[in-house]
Length: 109
Length: 111
Image (cartoon, rainbow over all chains, first blue to last red; front, top):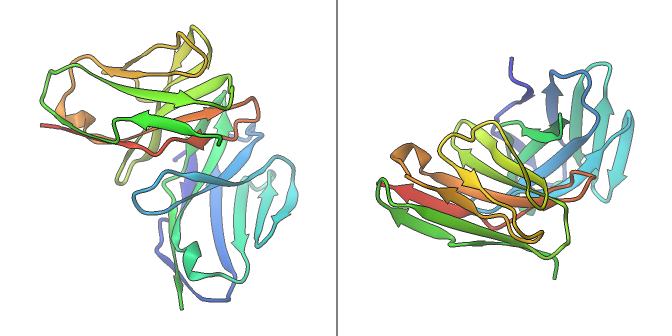
């Protein structure tokens, strides 16, 4: 079992809809969780971090954490073509960030 | 402007020729890391540093060396590069929150 698992996609969503990205992790002791966006050929950029169970909202982005079920998700409201990218989930484990392989998201105009 | 810089951005070299990829940050972060990114394998940590003169292995340290003599700099050294080290390399810096900020990447090809 991989430490951090994401569906590789591609996930195709129409413009204006909600994109839902999911991530599961294996280490129940993990405390910190991060979502990064990576455009093709570019470096990952931090979208959000979340540390407590529940929802955290930042503009069109909402991160959701459920530690009991060991999953973290990212919702993107009013999806725009510029949101087309690979989204990486990362989990802090023993002072190291472990990344999932990423979900490729395509927003169709 | 807060940033992480890496040089060179692109490098083609031959097997066995020592090389160094530099990384510098201007955010006064204590922590820095090196990652490699390969298709199908994702981002994997090579080495990280928690402060000056404090470094530790990540998940794929074989064939790499690092040093942290100054807080802002964290060079990655390949003493004898091999073709399996052909990859896209990222440096990152961060504080104790672990919100990592990545450099632009170095695409390395070893022939």
